[in-house]
Image (cartoon, rainbow, N blue to C red; front, side, top):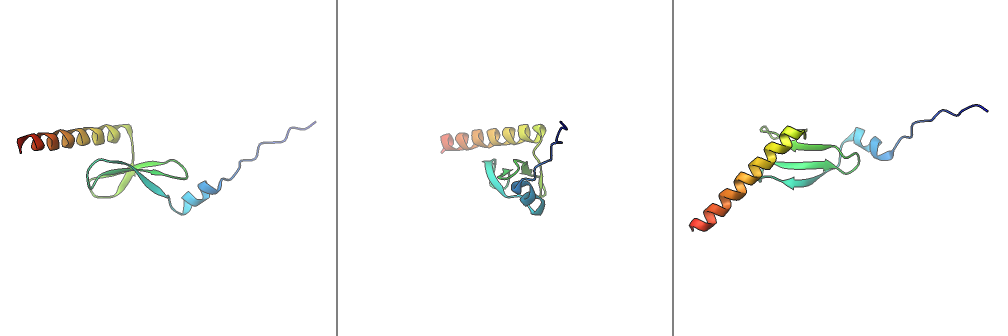
Length: 82
Protein backbone atom coordinates (compact mmCIF):
# COMPACT_ATOMS: atom_id res chain seq x y z
CA UNK A 1 0.00 0.00 0.00
CA UNK A 2 1.37 3.38 -1.02
CA UNK A 3 1.45 6.27 1.46
CA UNK A 4 -0.56 9.32 0.52
CA UNK A 5 1.47 12.50 0.93
CA UNK A 6 0.03 15.17 3.17
CA UNK A 7 -1.36 18.02 1.13
CA UNK A 8 -1.13 21.42 2.76
CA UNK A 9 -4.57 22.78 3.47
CA UNK A 10 -5.28 26.34 2.42
CA UNK A 11 -7.15 28.22 5.10
CA UNK A 12 -9.54 30.94 4.07
CA UNK A 13 -8.24 33.15 6.88
CA UNK A 14 -4.68 32.88 5.54
CA UNK A 15 -5.92 33.84 2.11
CA UNK A 16 -7.68 36.87 3.56
CA UNK A 17 -4.46 38.02 5.20
CA UNK A 18 -2.69 38.11 1.84
CA UNK A 19 -5.18 40.80 0.83
CA UNK A 20 -4.90 42.66 4.14
CA UNK A 21 -4.99 41.90 7.83
CA UNK A 22 -8.05 42.47 10.02
CA UNK A 23 -6.52 44.10 13.12
CA UNK A 24 -8.28 44.60 16.44
CA UNK A 25 -6.90 46.70 19.30
CA UNK A 26 -5.70 44.44 22.11
CA UNK A 27 -3.96 46.98 24.35
CA UNK A 28 -4.10 50.78 24.50
CA UNK A 29 -0.81 52.19 25.75
CA UNK A 30 -1.50 55.90 25.10
CA UNK A 31 -3.91 57.75 22.84
CA UNK A 32 -1.44 57.36 19.98
CA UNK A 33 0.24 54.01 20.76
CA UNK A 34 -1.80 50.81 20.61
CA UNK A 35 -1.13 47.10 20.20
CA UNK A 36 -3.11 45.21 17.55
CA UNK A 37 -3.74 41.55 16.74
CA UNK A 38 -5.02 40.12 13.46
CA UNK A 39 -8.28 38.23 13.91
CA UNK A 40 -7.38 35.76 11.16
CA UNK A 41 -3.72 34.82 11.52
CA UNK A 42 -2.82 36.10 15.01
CA UNK A 43 -0.06 38.47 13.86
CA UNK A 44 0.69 41.13 16.50
CA UNK A 45 1.81 44.66 15.64
CA UNK A 46 2.17 48.01 17.39
CA UNK A 47 2.48 51.66 16.40
CA UNK A 48 5.99 53.08 16.07
CA UNK A 49 7.13 56.68 16.55
CA UNK A 50 6.13 57.59 13.00
CA UNK A 51 2.60 56.19 13.36
CA UNK A 52 3.28 53.16 11.18
CA UNK A 53 2.65 49.57 12.20
CA UNK A 54 5.64 47.39 13.08
CA UNK A 55 5.99 43.82 14.32
CA UNK A 56 5.39 43.48 18.07
CA UNK A 57 8.63 42.01 19.41
CA UNK A 58 9.48 41.22 23.02
CA UNK A 59 11.51 44.44 23.22
CA UNK A 60 8.65 46.62 21.96
CA UNK A 61 6.24 44.82 24.30
CA UNK A 62 8.49 45.70 27.28
CA UNK A 63 8.84 49.31 26.12
CA UNK A 64 5.06 49.64 25.76
CA UNK A 65 4.55 48.20 29.25
CA UNK A 66 7.07 50.69 30.74
CA UNK A 67 5.44 53.66 28.99
CA UNK A 68 2.00 52.53 30.14
CA UNK A 69 3.22 52.13 33.74
CA UNK A 70 4.92 55.53 33.69
CA UNK A 71 1.79 57.31 32.43
CA UNK A 72 -0.44 55.51 34.93
CA UNK A 73 1.81 56.61 37.82
CA UNK A 74 1.92 60.17 36.46
CA UNK A 75 -1.89 60.35 36.25
CA UNK A 76 -2.23 59.03 39.83
CA UNK A 77 0.30 61.58 41.09
CA UNK A 78 -1.58 64.43 39.37
CA UNK A 79 -4.87 63.29 40.89
CA UNK A 80 -3.34 63.36 44.38
CA UNK A 81 -1.88 66.84 43.85
CA UNK A 82 -5.24 68.38 42.92
